[in-house]
Image 1 (cartoon, rainbow, N blue to C red):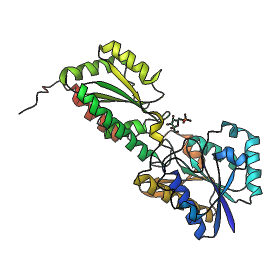
Image 2 (image 1 turned 180 degrees about the vertical axis):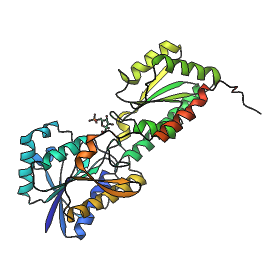
Image 3 (image 1 turned 135 degrees about the vertical axis):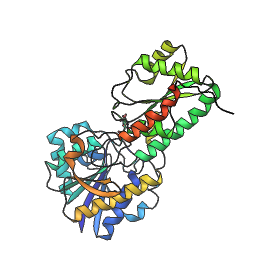
Image 4 (image 1 turned 90 degrees about the vertical axis):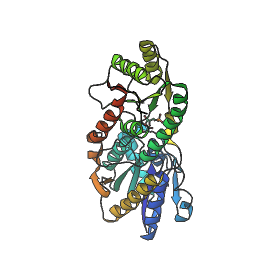
Length: 337
Ligand code: F6P
């Protein structure tokens, strides 16, 4: 019987468990045994092996996080770590490894491939959606739902009290969650790393004051991508409050965005990619990522997934900029009866 291995690596993402289920069940039908290593690359080097059987997969798809556990393991950049991992994989007679993770994990996967003769296959699993070569990543859709839900909740109190809120969302250095959450949450403004030019504090303050003048009894929500404003939304809130004389409440969403049950879209994506990864292995493929482009499963050379930045969809950027522009409209805002 052939044997393959799977790990979940880096920041966990809702849908990773559904992906493991698809891998295990697809492999089983082709008489391929699957072993998981707990805690990602660290778990391979420490031989934290865990056999995986279809019977154990019945209740996993609906759970967030990853039952295989994950970790960040920068030590894996070292040649000795990759060699140690290769040795452990060989000791289990493993012929292929599937890495479910983000761009850092794919770098690790490519590094391992350089020191191991087995097949390495990547599956994009990160809430950030910042991987080139795939339209979306496992966990992104659920994270956007979570951010939207949080914005909706903040909106209720913000509207009741006519307050300004700065909601910080994750994304590391990419604005995908921010853009999608801003549109879905009908935000009045957004601050994303990809926006050129970056809005200045004075402009943001001016926009808030103009919106307060036009809609004095209303809420105003700014979606802010993390790692963008020095000191985050707390510092931005202080600065804007001083500049406007209006209290701007900071509200970082943090790791809430990584948790929760995966939504249907993420489960379906995860299962498509998991099943396709096993097929690719059986066809002898190696050093690729299995992604999704325009609803079709695609195979992308692994190094291309982290060699370039993935751009935001400019149509969505323009949509949000246009919609939020209503707050700054100079024409009369008086409602007609
Ligand atoms: O990669 C996913 C992510 O949640 C990013 O959005 C965020 O910047 C980072 O992980 C946080 O990492 P950690 O949980 O290790 O602090």
